[in-house]
Amino acid sequence: MSPEEAERVCDRLHEYVDRGPGENPDAFSKALAAVRSLRADASSDYPLSLLAEIETQLGRWFSDRVLRGTDEALECRRDLLDHISRLEDAWDRLVA
Image (cartoon, rainbow, N blue to C red):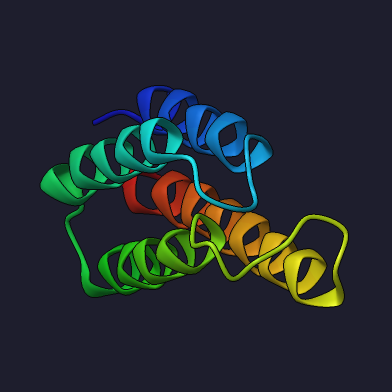
């Protein structure tokens, strides 16, 4: 997967994150599908470890325990977006 394609998938992940927090089975399943597509093309351990962490965080983000506007939700969102950004950067470096 090219860096441009990976960036588009990461942009979709951002969109899915924007649909949370809280239960949203549709956004959660689409986010997991995006993670799986990236994982299928990841070629080193670092992006794979970021994807594993993103997948775990998505499970937390789309759970019924995280409520919009709480400190936990803000922290979870920040962590997710940080990991997605690091993944985009890592993907760019893999091809460079």
